[in-house]
Amino acid sequence: MSISFDAAQPESNLLSPELYWFIPSGGDGHRLGRPTRPASFSYLSQVAQAADVLGFDGVLLPTGGNNEETLVVASALSSLTRHLRFLVALRPGLLSPVLAARLTASLDRISGGRVNLNIVSGSGNFDFEGLDLTQAERYELTAEWLGVFRALLRGEEVTHHGPHLQLTNGRAPLPSVQQPYPPIYFGGSSQPALAVAGEHVDVYLSWGERPEQVAEKFAQVQAHAAQHGRTVRFGLRAHIIVRETEDEAWAAADDLIAGISDEAIAQAHQAFLSSGSEGQRRQSALNGGTRESLRVGPNLWAGVGLVRGGAGTAFVGSAQNVAAALREYQRVGVDTFVLSGYPHLEEAYRTAELLFPALGRPSPALTPHAGQRLGHTSTPTLDANRTDQTQAERELVSAGRFRSI
Image (cartoon, rainbow, N blue to C red; front, side):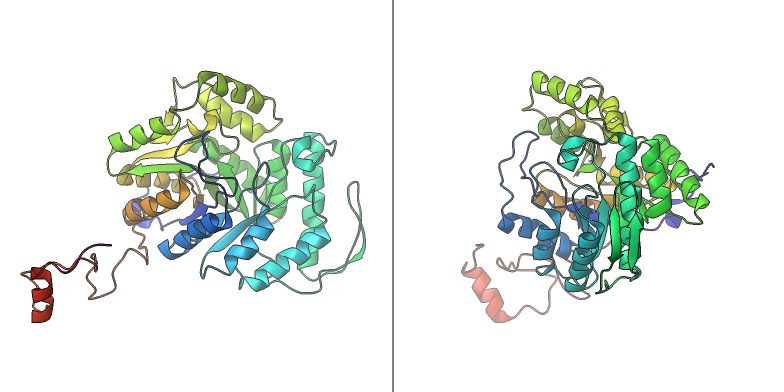
């Protein structure tokens, strides 16, 4: 099956995409390899609340490694936010489908229907706490697990005896708010992963590759989905470095990896190639384990993947050029971008301030209401064009009695 997209489609016909941000639950900082901000709950709360008020649609909570467990973090942050959706990782190798269904339904009810699910099949024994599974077996388990999990959330009583799961009269008695279940996201670039996506998931997530590479995977997923009478939506996971000008953005990209030694890059590259993950292999192939050729597409940079596992590319450039790059991916089917930037608190604001307007997307925290003047209220100034400034205000300003704090 092939999917064709009109590269000449006018920008006016492209809707503003969904934009998700990232909760750095493994630590944060200004440079790769040098985390200077521990993942305290206070800091994670600041990032989540910033994303909420700035108008991001949701946040991704990472899993594995030194990250805090996603269900716990999402449960705590949901009470501190109003609109934000939480893309929460579930790992078939670690959770029974019955427990996962019950936890998911509870979190969806507590958050008022703001849960999305990110199914993570892992890349080897480490991700499955020592389960000795081949790549094919990992995805066989994932498909089996998802079939049971989805049935439980639909309210069915499930008896299942398969190669990996045994269940008799399993139930998840309390329903989720979202029916039949919260949206299921999933990523993976191997052929078994693409087949699982087509059969079971709502949104297939790709890491940032060139548009033609992403389109090829999307076509394969959609072909698998068609065999099951389904359709799948598509998303892209990448980092972002957006600035007022191109020069500023590329200088910030260079600075992000300035403290990383060539030895560290070589060690990470070898580890990534031996990870057993097809997606990781493809990310590493983009940078080749060297700083020499990191610009792999218009405003697409592979420097993050020199030492960071998982998503290794970033959109880099001015707001207008990054927006144009995102639209290229929209033309091949992407309607959700899951973005992140270092450090995540400041970059959430920078992305909303610069990128949102370029995409025609208002930010409720940064756009004044009708008739409201947006300015620093702690430091009033005389404004010759204002007719509503009182004499008392003018006297206070003239006397110098207002100071910024």
